[in-house]
Length: 495
Image (cartoon, rainbow, N blue to C red; front, side):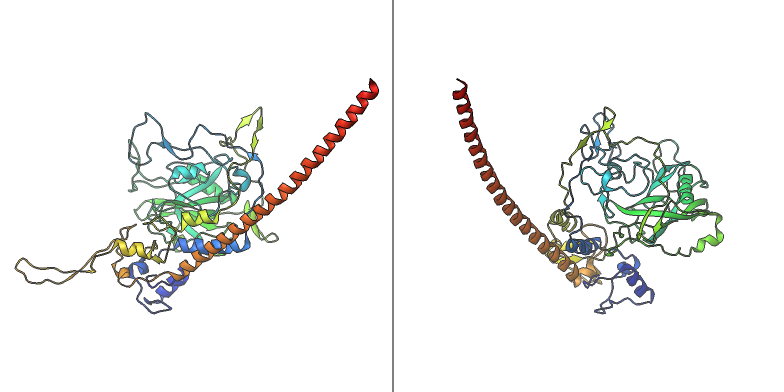
């Protein structure tokens, strides 16, 4: 918040729901925009999770293993525009770069380490990308435009929450999703927000219902285009793990036409990006959905789910074999009927410094945050950068009439450097986010400590390697001399 204090989203909503508009700790006034639309500070959440993981040294050192090589060297690493294609604004004519994972396009469930030959870690919850084409490169969501990836008789593998329908409701661990269709996209129409006919359980909508019936895990990607959700990322797209569809039905939508509705509940072994938990989800009771009272044709799973929680192992797993793939592996390279193996080129270690440089940077100076300040819109800036951006600007605008008479002073609008939100009230008394500053400081100290330990270990290895090498050379030289002497004596006797 503007006073520099941080709270859980659920606790904050509960506090606001009691009619209170002041901070619990310092009793300062909470910004009205934050009350109406609270946003999660994902940078702070990431810092807390990294600090926990770095203490346990989880996934910092992994053995290098040979995996099927992604052999698409003819494609660049990033999405590209083909030469000769019609030039349009944005990524309208862009093509996907090379595929980094070895999975078919109809793969169900999480993308594991054995499917990631480059990094040997799989696609982790919380990873984000700039474009939808990047999601395709990592196999999280294959369609370029469609929000649902699936086949009517096979099931749905993934969905994207992008705010396409007004009926959508996002509650983080569960959400209500509206199916596709019901809009006129004839001719050259690419998008149309007005619904003109009813949706039905066909095509992609039927694919979601098949996943509900079988209990398949569905990968979920949240987009920054979903402005109504507090759990949506600020920029780009973010992978939030797998969910399971528990119910589906039809109802009369906001625009007066029937829509297909789905209840998604999170069931992933990794914690959600907006929490600092160390463990993933556990089975939870289904939420109460008021609209089910007027729903049409409610469908619920009648038999055991394919993806379910194992009480003995304490994790989600396939209780039944996943459906066999109907597609070929795009990222695989076949040679003489066998997959070629190659040691991954990139390092298998997760660099804390790289994560710091990428995730905890100031938007203005592009460096790691120094004296971080969190605005009501959940963007983070260095204190010096934010002060420099609004240097010389007054909070009150004095006005005068043409005859010299003074008019009522007017509030000066100060837009956030990243988004159009007014942060003038925040700038009147900005506070440093001490919790975020401490988390980044601890990560820095642990990184430099581990970096020094690595250098010391490398020096010891070099010294040990030099000694055996010298001894081995001496033994080889001595053995050679002895052999030469033996050869000479044999030749003399022979002659």
